[in-house]
Length: 141
Image (cartoon, rainbow, N blue to C red):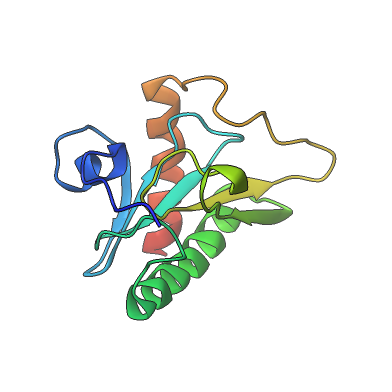
């Protein structure tokens, strides 16, 4: 298995070297808006500890990611009055992984509306902020 690269973009976000629209943070996890969302409210749950993907993550860290993923799924459902939520997690290039720091996609879904294509367009910062504010408000309730 390939070693963890601490220069990946999410490692840089976690160290504060790259900007992000932060939604939530606890002792073990960090949640940000996806800058190339497949739909409004698309966010990413990251473990704070280094892990390339689900194949090498510490089980306790994975459990923390799962808890935060559930919390974020409930928040985006509420924030966007969504009909459902898609949870995605990819492992290794053949599995669709592009950034090699474990992350879980949480995407609010709406009946009859397809998700946008992956990694296709960078969202405007003001749109990300508006969507982030909705999610943060839902988390606060």
